[in-house]
Image (tube, one colour):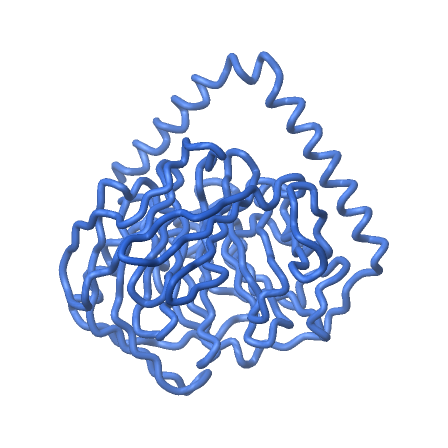
Amino acid sequence: MKLQEINYTATDGARAVIDRIARTEDIRLSPDRRRLAIAGFARNQIALLDIDIRGVGASSTIALNSGQIISSDNLKRPHGIDFIGNRHLAVANREGDLVVFELPPTGNGNADLLPVFVRPSRKAPKLGLPGSVRVITSGPDSAKLLVCNNATNKVTEHELALNDRITLTGERELLNRWVELPDGLALSPDHRWLAISNHDAHNIAIFDLAATPLNADAPPVAILRQIHYPHGLHFSADGKRLFAADAGTPYIRSFHCPDGTWHGVFNPECNLRSMDDETFLKGNTNPEEGGPKGIELDRQSGLLIVTSEHQPLSFFDSSLINGANEPAPATDLDYELRVMATQKAKVDHLTSSSSWRLTAPLRSATTAWRRFRKSQR
């Protein structure tokens, strides 16, 4: 199914920011719907756009009225972003720390910022390559953040006090056993369901936050499959759909749970094409890249907002998406978990071997060389 794209207008300042952003990883709309942030992974920047969305669905009008490039010495491969209220932005840096910035007033140009909060990734418990972040609760005096740790296959929870300065008041490891290179996460509108993208397991795991307190070994209550490399995620306004960016394809996968109770195994209700073949192939330099990365849903207008390296900003009407897929029998969930456990045991055995440790410098040098070559294009 091809999504209906909604065109937008942009001032010269906003257009210049979009044209400069290069490879992107995440995209978020502020709670007041007035600002749009895009994580510029390759150039260590954040694109910040002043946005005005009016109307609903296909009749929506979108205007980008100004744009800024946010830079900082504390932006090191920014991979995940989320707003804390309307004035602060949390950033998970793949090669750095978890940081929070106070955003400048709207306008055009460049802004070099110092963070108002830094949670060092090497401090125990370690944040192994923090990749994605979501604010799951936010009030005038406090906020709670979830962070995906790619290198350690963990999801951690961090509580912040928002006073004259932002301080860390508590943190814990939330999930571990059923997480395999977590690349994105989403929370349902009622805060009951937590969805995690498992890049290496090629699935999405959903956890029930209302059932029992989560711990490192807590199993998921649902597995969403038939997705190659899940990345950005977002629940619909009623919590009965989950949209998932499939980074290794030109598609967004739409999963549907008719009663909103995510238990069992789900296949996509439909595959939503978000880009043409030419755009996809520009970025498809390996099986994991080329497709959509960050995904946001403006629940008021029903617009899906999508970002990727060669299509940095697109808007689509989600109101026409419908399907009636039914979850597989509940017994399939046990099978999926056994498969995950077996695969993870094999990977753990490989990565603990002496040959894996001996070849680590070569793998690191190869990765650095590929990144350098890509930066010269």
